[in-house]
Image 1 (cartoon, rainbow, N blue to C red):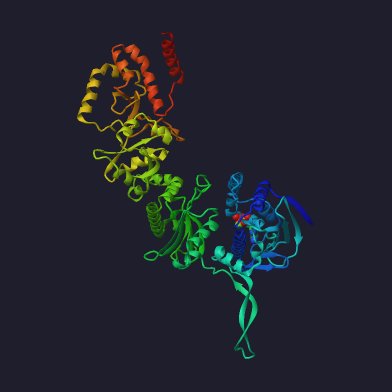
Image 2: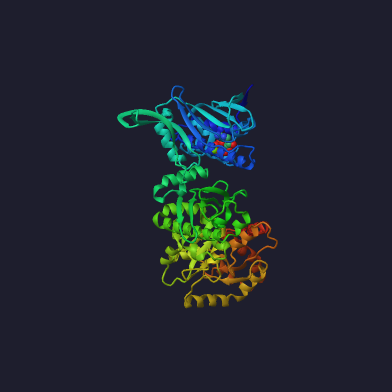
Length: 638
Ligand code: ADP
Ligand code: MG
């Protein structure tokens, strides 16, 4: 019986994009199908080992064969095979969790007519339709019936009963006709198939076999070599089957490392960094470590699990070992292979293993070391890394209460007031500090633009003192843990004590303060619910007022903490309202010193102005508007 079924909508979308994209790298379809075959064999083996003899242990292989007359390429395996339901669920539907995200990316790419991105995705089975007019899948599970799935990759597929003796899957690709752009016939050539397998699938753990032709010297009746050649067709194993990381380091090049990453971790882009680590000593291990060149789509989802794969002598033990990587490096992908781990090691023992801890520490240092190198060698690439993952480093400093300060502080880079569009490292900042400058200054806010509008910053701009601009929520918390860099303390320009004043300046401020004691006290009294103090400021140039804070908890931190879910009690920063003594508004207010009722009326406006200038919301908008209106009406009626 033959049934016809429609592809699921998302599958159709991928398929139509696949088919319509003229993609120069269509060869990756073979990598995908071989990888599926290898997975299928893994699954068979796993079931057989569990079955206590019911399912026989067999010799496994993956086989390629071509038929030049029919223009077909066949990939077969003797793995687990698929039932009818499997065919519908696995090939008729997009099953992988990342697929939705992939469809979104694909759509964006198509909107931009950027077809290049398409073939770079590891979309597995469907990639066959990049090269095929028609695909047939003949498959059988060990104890089930055989089925034939056929599709031209457009809207639908058919499934029918079929004949097949052994378990496994045979995928037949009917190649498209070659065009001026793409030579599909290349997938019928022994030479190119060998190359593609070497390039992408060399480390596959099962033999990938193909009948290949060899020129061999003819033998005479006694078995002695003659000077004549003949062509012999014989089976050849195309892959070395040695896992990439167990090869000699000098035999492995960057491209292989990158291809391995893309295949293994289903990424469509090369990694930003690939590291091949080999350690021989107290502990022995090989490790491949990768930093993706973009944020993995699921990094911030609850389902994301950090960790490295664990192997022992090339044999797979565990998919995710979180113990091997610190939390703040959770975006790092890779694997560790150590002969010192026992295959049947239990979870608990793994977790407690001191070796695990040593390897993890070692890996952490290697990654940080490589990042330091990247920063020196290729700052642009480093910026790319930092924009994707920099906040994790800051989190590393914060979450360990500064224990990782020495390890990580040199990796931090920031935008700064005088070096706006570029990033500055702390070392750069320190080197450019002015002679009399005591602190590393920073300012924080929602965005770079809003920080640059802070009233306090004007003075630094005028004096040519640089200020780090912190626009990430974690920033100030991390800096709080750092406290200082190379013996220079950090200081927020919004901290009450940020000013470095000459004696003369100090005296001036004191005099104005003494002359306006009553005015300041009246304002303070009116605002006692909001501020701890009201002072004459030395921080301002043009703005009439600003807010500073005491005791390290800044306005930004106050906001971040209060927005956190589960905060029971509101956190309050100790605020100080600072008034610019040079501003006309102050001068006018000063003349009204003594008229306490009048001063009190305007006090809340001063505070609201300061909040607005700090980029914060004012609490009682109705009150603010009413007061502003009454002022406008007075002015208009004059
Ligand atoms: P992925 O391999 O990432 O799951 P694919 O599109 O490559 O996505 O394959 C979809 C599914 O189809 C696989 O997960 C597997 O269940 C099934 N499949 C594909 N090829 C084979 C095969 N040769 N043998 C058995 N099952 C297969
Ligand atoms: Mg696959």
